[in-house]
Length: 328
Image 1: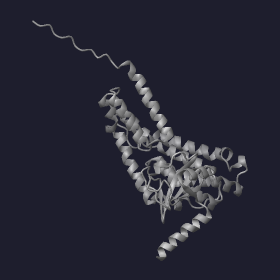
Image 2 (image 1 turned 45 degrees about the vertical axis):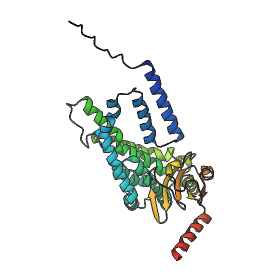
Image 3 (image 1 turned 90 degrees about the horizontal axis):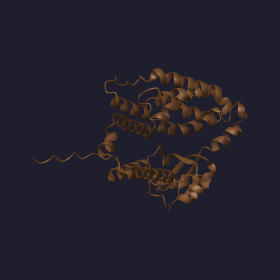
Image 4 (image 1 turned 120 degrees about the vertical axis):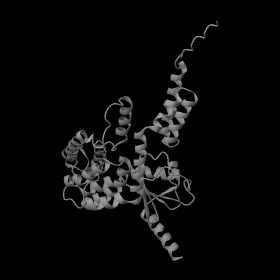
């Protein structure tokens, strides 16, 4: 009788697997910092390199794509993109904010609806849409913009903790909980509200109390001075025009790398204002790019990417060119 062959024992991961994974992660983070490509491309590339080297099991590597939380987040991005492109949030928020008499009243009018919206939508497009609205609103109400931007950011974060779909983290953790404890009851949409709503309310109350003393333009910095508010706003909003022959013409927005403290908020194309454009959005000659951030960086950014700073003269030329086209 022939002897049975001994079973093959799994020797576990190879010693070099750990070094390989660390190297891939370092390369990926370096590429993210250099903005070599979009985050989705770089992360998928890193996953492919690990799968190719068999450092990650195929089943485990692709398991996340079947996560219900991840799919729900993807659907919410579609909803947020629709709201951003239609300008629905822009219209209703402009009417809802009104004309408050005090900074505290303005912050309450801002934070409450933003927290409610962020409980059901992704925070990033909500904040991106609201930045230009707040810049105009702060001028109208004679309030320092710095007294509104931090409340905007934190209200969106606090609102996201109130529901299961308010932030992608909640959905991912809920999916992991289902896998780890299949017998446990699934979380409902408002299960987290029992804890999230009190946290959101206490956070907004703290902002109302502390912002006059901690944020620029408040009591602690001689707030109420309109010239101070104007200078703060100037440092937060700046424009540039895609010049004829610019290297970014017919190129995606993702080619605008190294913006030195500037962040693209929206693109004006003719009479159409496009907010929170995707990295694949193609730029055209004459597009007006609206940035937020450090105004002193606009010169370097324009020189590097072939843009023209948006001045009164450039704006008049654009308007004249548009009128000539209409005359033809």
